[in-house]
Every structure is written in structure tokens, then in C-alpha cells.
Length: 403
Image (cartoon, rainbow, N blue to C red; front, top):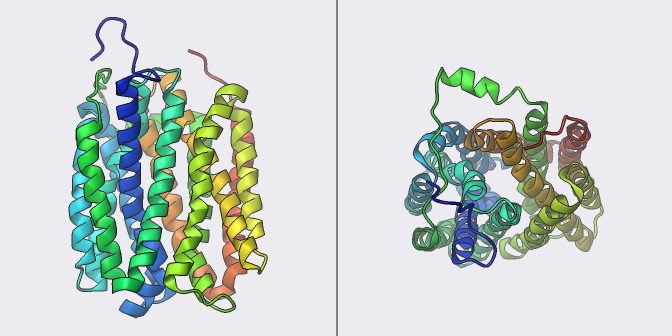
């Protein structure tokens, strides 16, 4: 609870550094675990004798379960607090990561991945709300941008680790490596994360469905939910299919070399804090549509055959995607707070649609690759991005709320 006039950790204070680093590391742990199998999809196809579309279930099952978990853990965090849920999430993720590396059969692996996805919901359910509550309002957008950078670094590290370790010892060794990273991050977050001082439990009255319905009454929030689903769907569609493309003719790359393409996430890790600063200066209504256009341009570049064009396109895609996501996710928290809605619930609904988009488009990407090759994947991802661009324009025309 708040005491005196304290209004949150400020830049330069130990609490700000510890909170920012801890949530950054939590993002690394969660997203390295969530997307670790993405670089292994061709290997899983061969090892378990499943189709490319079937192999994408290793990602989609987790993201779907994560989306469901958000509907439970988001409202729970509004009542019980943020930090306990975050620590439990990271611990469960570490244990399940070890079990997944030992899975004896494809159905068992999918069940464990589903449980892991539900556990992973603890971070996106509470991270933005925690940072908005515990950091000074003048610096929270910057810290949220750093958190999104952690998710980008996590997604990158998980894919690189698995791509490299697959050639050393197969997919079990690869997923075991990401489990070790998850354990290390869980311990670090336990030691670093400051306890909540400004959290105030939300007293809930009425039925859950009525409470959820109220979160869908703001046109701006609706647009942000749609943008989340469409942008994430477009990004995951491309990254789910790209390793199949790179291991196929004319590139014929090994799993380790194909996994290096995920270095394209690095520009994304840098773009999110920059976009947050630009949004603070020029406004979110201008920055979001601009970054969506950047993402669409990156997807179009991957249509070209030279390998450097594919890699450049992925870099541009990641830059636009993470910039848009960083600004949009912080916008949800601000909008909910100004509109008198529970911040944790609004942030969870944003993440829910984000992962619904990932599950749906990620699975469709496998079918698009099987049916129409890379052109089909680009049409799917480009269509998602174009629709998100339309919603970003609509978002800019919604009524602004003031404190």
C-alpha cells in the first residue's frame, strides 16, 4: 500500500532498476520457453512423423492455453496482487520445461505444452499492471518498453538455443537448454523484484461475465484488442513457416543456420523502448499506425528470393511489430485506468486476444505453407497486418480520455 506522498519508483532509484531488470528477465524466461519449439518445427515433424501443420500445435497449444490462463490470472491478480502470481508462474514454467524435454510421445508433449502455456500466463497477466502501479507515471512507459524488449530477447534466445543445441543432441537437448535458462531467470526474479507497495485490491461485485462485458464497452480498447490479435497473428505466421522455407530448396540450411534467422528479433528488442519514447513525445495515435506500416513492409520484402532480402524483411517486420506492440500494450493500461476499469483485467484481455491471434494464425501458417508455399504465408500475414492498419486508423478517431 502507498505511504505518504510516495508515487512510485523513479529513474535512477534502486527500486526502478530492480523492477525493470526483474520484469525484463521474466520476459526472457517466459518467451524463451513459449517459442523455443518454433525453431524445432521441422525437427519435430521428422521425429514424431507429423505434418508441418501438425507440428505447429507445439506452439499453438501453448498460446491457446496461455490465452485461457489470462482470463483467470488477470482478474485474480486484481484481487490477490501481482508478485505472488508472477513468482508462481516462473517456478511452474521451469518445472514443466524439464518435463517437456523428457516427453515420451507427441500427445504427452502437447499436454505438457498446454499446461506450460497456462502457467506462462502469469507474466503477461500482471507485468504491465505491476509496472503501471509501482513505477512513477512519468517513467512507466519506458519500463514497459524494456519489458517488451525482454519478451523479444526471450523469443530470440529460445529459438537460437534450440536451433544450436538441436544439432548437438536433438530436440530433447534443445528444450532442456531452454529449461535451464528458465530456472536461472526464475531465481533471479525472486531475488530482484520489489514487493508491491501501491497495489490496491479491486473489490468485485456482480458476476464475472458482467465484469468482462464492461471491458468491451470502450471502442478504443476493442480496437487495441483487435490490433493485438492481428499483429501477433501476422508475426507468428511468418516465423512459424520461415524455418521450413530455409531448410527447403534453394537455401537448404541446417537447423542451426536456419535458427540464426531469429536474430531478426534484435531490432525488435531495440524498437520497443524507442517507440515508447516517441509515443510519449508525439502521441500513441500517430506512432501505432506508422509502426504497423513498417511491419507490413517487412512482410512484403520476404517475398523476394535472395536470402539477404528474406533476413532484411524479417528485421523490418520485427522492428514494426515490437514497436507497435509496446505502444499498444501500454496504451491499454492507461486507457483502462482513465476509464475507471480494472487495469489487470484490461491488460489480460489485450494479451488474451494477442495469443488467440497467435494460436489461430500460427496453425493456419502451416496449412498455408503446405498449400501455397511462401506466397500463401505472406498473404495470410499481410492480410492480418492490413486489417490491423485499418483498426489503428479507427483507434486514432476514438474519443480521448483525460485524467
